[in-house]
Length: 381
Image 1: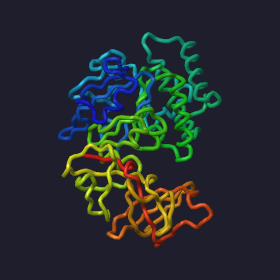
Image 2: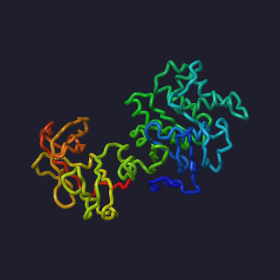
Image 3: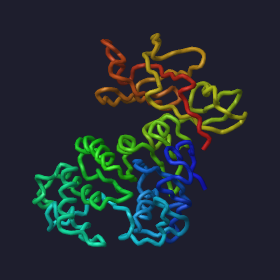
Image 4: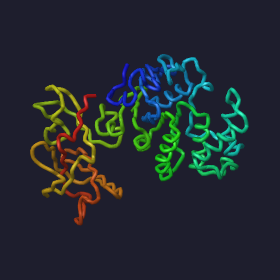
């Protein structure tokens, strides 16, 4: 079975030519279907993110790739080799865990060298030392080679764990929540740094995370998972701008979701004061029950009665009046929660420069929300 949202599923990885192929992978734990018939094609040197909430199956799928779990059904083929009969310690993969799992009694250089000493045929001491030096230089940790893990910061420990994962030159690098242990500022800085390192090495990488920002910053493509299923695969832009289901629309960022039935080419919706105009390219039949997703940054906000190009009116526009129920000031922009007359909340994300020199609306102010019909995304499931 192919994953939904197939538009992005073969990006850079044509069927039969993919560097990594996951074919119908399924895994059960007792009565729980942890991974449900997942198929995916990944290109060589691609950085791919599996994104989903806790318990969605993404880490189980990663562990199957590493050989730490055995699929109940399906195949995993890496660079033309079926990994079914290959034990974890013999697979051309390496996994970096969320906890980093550094040996506390070993120095940095000994941690990086550990896997190299297990290689068969054995490497010479000179070969191991050269490889360790190369990896420490790559992650800029040469000066800390003699330190123990407890003498390093969280970001430095993360670099050592990455160097150890790359030292054996794996064909596939698996990252399980690699930045979760870092605080927000360091995590944001490390995201691009980590991408640059992976691209310099040229290794194919699969990243598991529940952090949307992390996935969208680091990965060329994202697979959204829920309840063991792969719901949509695509580039960050495709996932955010054109979700194919309600879960993706709600899980990735924020959205305003309206439910109703198609009547006369518009959406008859109980929680909006007028029929919602649909995107002109929406292929729908009369009576279809659908949802319309509108991202907060697509919602235009103006003071009630004020004419503004930012809050258009007329043909092709959905509009309603309400009052400001809540505001979250985030520096570059503010998120307004506008309560309509029927109690429905509409969220609008407004750039701080939008209001110019005029004071922005505040709590309780009468305002108007509006969006162009093409800015809505129709979802049928």
